[in-house]
Amino acid sequence: MAEQTPHGVITQSDIETQRELIGLDEINSGQEFHSQIYEDAIRNFALSIGDDNPLYCDADYAKSTCWKGGVAPQIMTAVINTPLKGQRIPKEIKKKTYGLFKGCQTFVSGGTWHWYQPIVPGDKIYSFEGEESMQVKESEFGGTTVHIVHRYVKFNQRAEVIGVYRMLRILSERKEAKKKGKYKDLELGQYDDDAIAEINANYLNETPRGAEPRLWEDINEGDELKTLQKGPLTMTDIILTHCAGYGFAPYRMLATSRIAAKDRAKMPRMYINNARGIPDTAARVHWDTQAAKEVGNPEAYDWGLLREFWLYHAISDWMGDDAFVVSMHDEIRKFNYLGDFQILSGKVLKKYQDEGMNLVDVFVYAINQRGEETATAKATISLPSKGERCTLPKVPEDLKTKAAEFMAEHNRLTSGG
Image: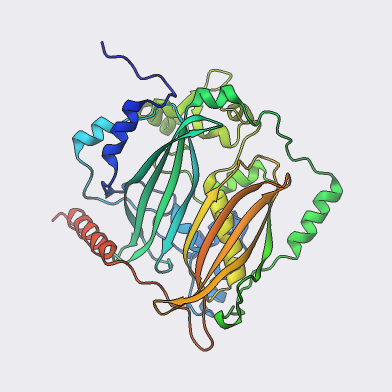
C-alpha cells in the first residue's frame, strides 16, 4: 500500500512533480464574478476599494476625458475572466500534478502587472495561464516554503492583449506556522475617539488628481507623491474586497449551501472544520480570528490582492486621468491584520523616454501604525506631454500571436466548428 503524503507538509516529491508544470500554458476556464464589463461594474469595483475618482464612478464625467468614455481601473483586470475553451495541459500531467501540497498554507505575496491598453465597457476578458517559475526557500516563519510564479495573459474578445499578471504564491507548511507562532504577541491596532477623528479629517482632505493632467515636463526625479490612507482594517473591508469581485475562481471561496457541498466533494482539503465541527472554507483566515490563530497569526488578515488594489489606487490618484500605468511590481512584506492602519507614500525615482513614451518610475510603500513597511510597489507610468496624449505600450509579438491562437480556437469551439 502506497504511503500517504502527510497533510500540510511540503515534500520533495511534490516539489519535483510541480516542476513538470513550468512553461505549460492552458486556457483559463474559470468564471470570475465579472466577465463582461459595464459602467456599473467599474463603479462598484472602484467604490469597494475606496476609490471615488469620477473617471471610474461617473459615466458622464468619463465621456469628457481623453478616453472619451468609461475605463476601468487597470488593476480591475485581476477580477475579470470569461471561461475560455480550448487547449489544456496534457491529461497525464494534469492527473499527476493534481493535489500537490495538500493542506499547506498559501499566501499571495505580490506580483507584477504589465498593461497594454484600457478595459472599456462592453469588453469581455479571457485569459490563458501557466506556471512560469518555482523556487524553494527556507522561511523563519513557516520552515520550508515554495515560491511559485503563475502567469496570466489577459485579452479581450478581439484578441487584443490587455495585460499580463505574474502572481507570486508562497506555500508554507501549516503545522510549522502554527508551532512557531512568530506573531502571537504582536500589538494589534487600538484607537480612541481623537485618533479616529484625526483619521477621518485626513480622509476628507484626500482628492484624486483627476482632470488636471500631470504633464511629463513638470515632473522631477525625487518628487514626493501625496499620501493615501487605508484603514483601520475592518471585516467590512474584507467583505467589500469580495464585493469588488475577488475570490470567486477557481475555488469559489464564498460558496454556500449546495454549491459549497459540491466544492467540498471536489476539493475536500479546501474546507476545514470549525470549533463546532462544521466544514468551512480554509480562506476564512481572512475574517475568522480563531482560524487565523490556527495558522500562527494573532488576528484575521487581509488578502494580498487587496493591498495591490490599494497600491494601484495611490498611483492612479497621483497620476491623473490622462495617464496610463505601464507596469506595476508589488511585494507584500507583512500581514495586515484587522485593526491595522496604513499610510501609503511614494516618490518619483526616474524620468525618461522610451519607445515613444514619456515615462516616470515611481515607488510607493505602505507603513502601518507600528511603523512597519507592509507592502511596496514600483510602477512605470506613461504621462501626457504638452499638447499630446499619453502613449500606450506595444504588445510583444509572441503574446499577440498566442492570444490570437487561443481566441480563434475558442471561437471555433463555441460556434460548433
